Length: 270
Length: 340
Image 1 (cartoon, rainbow over the protein chains, first blue to last red):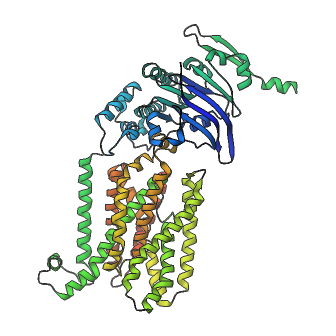
Image 2: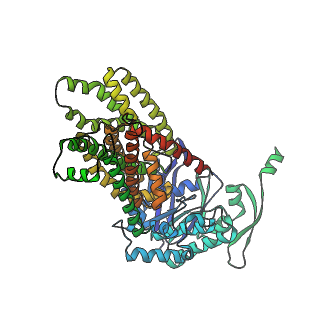
Image 3: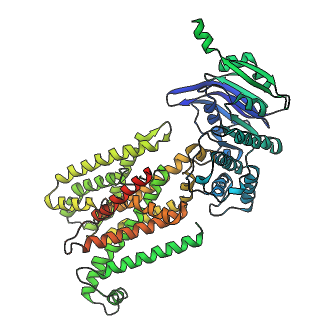
């Protein structure tokens, strides 16, 4: 049986006086890749941030391994859950390896020196993200794709079983997008990491996820496998597009290979 | 930055501090040789004239210059660190002004009474930093509550409110000092521009406990300032209680600043310049930047005070003015550089 690692119960969240979603319930399955998709402003990033306790909910609860996250210290949570935010920033003079070592914070007891275990995990994180080659460079000297991999390595150095990624492929070229997602896939397969991410590209979502949560206007429209979500009716309902779907013969994932908007038709009718 | 290179640089800085102290202590209205200074300090053939000059005038003044530079250098580093803004400075944030106003009020209301009632002056000097702390705290609470939005500290608002609060408190200080008796007014204005020429040992005793308690706390938390340079979501994700840690660091800095302001008035720009120079010397890791910034701050204040006492001798210029003359071009240089 698949158990839930994260469960949101009647979750309400937003910014200042704006409520982005209210009374939301959802369950994330252990050891799976779950992707949240939806149009701009639907609340997918807000949901991810609230689950990752970056944003404080206005009401409701998030349960981590069936324990209310409000009752767990933030450092304890950081040992189980890491979040890579959408626009991470670091001082430009910071060295790559130093930044990655920041990921060890929740595990470190004395602040002065890294333990052998810390160094081991940092090496592993650099190895899996292929960032070892530029470990001595400064952040300023890296390309966008390299930076994203370094940030991913920092999140991995946290050594958590749950990884939250907020649009990890934004601003990356095609090859780097795929590279990042393949690292994510490998983490899930080889290290049984539970992954929850927000993606804009529905084809990437379909290819790399076990489960997709489709959101619109602060509500979860539907949850299902890629084949269940990449379907004419659902895509019309969520994105308001007329999609053409086929199955990729290489990996069996559904692919949206072309689409039209309904907007023009609607305008024409009016 | 390697530890060895840091040790070399900090040793060089300390050496420079001693050289500055040496120049400061041997030069003045009458010059002394280093032999005179050493024999006086070691109590070999004590001489009343030398004793008076060294123990009553020059030494307390140098020690205060050093302590104020140290405190402002450290507080400036912390404030730039938690606001993630290289142009932030305790002066810009209004903490100086808040502490200053409170001390002007204190001078206005209490000190005259204490003097009148004949109780000795040192009681009032000892409680001056406490008053400064209250004023600094009030300023900080006002700034905090205006810049606290949506459960977090909004750094942009922090700086904007700081500037507003700073001029508000400045005006208030001016207003109160205008109501003072002439002699008090003169004392207050000189003190407000930042001066240490009426230094004495009681000032040092008054500020020392603040520095001795708060600076170790800041130094222990210095490593957190490195993490706080990441954007907020990443810091929180690492399991750092960002608001709590920022508040502790800010409160400690307010305490340090208040102690400095209480004895020297508002010396601005040290908290801005020292961290910048320190970062250029030792990189961005705060366990190195904080001690280096302390050393640079000491050097700057001792050097400026030396200029303040000698350039127009026998007339004295408040050290704060010298620091400002050095600081304004540096501030402009930083602005131009950050544009480029």
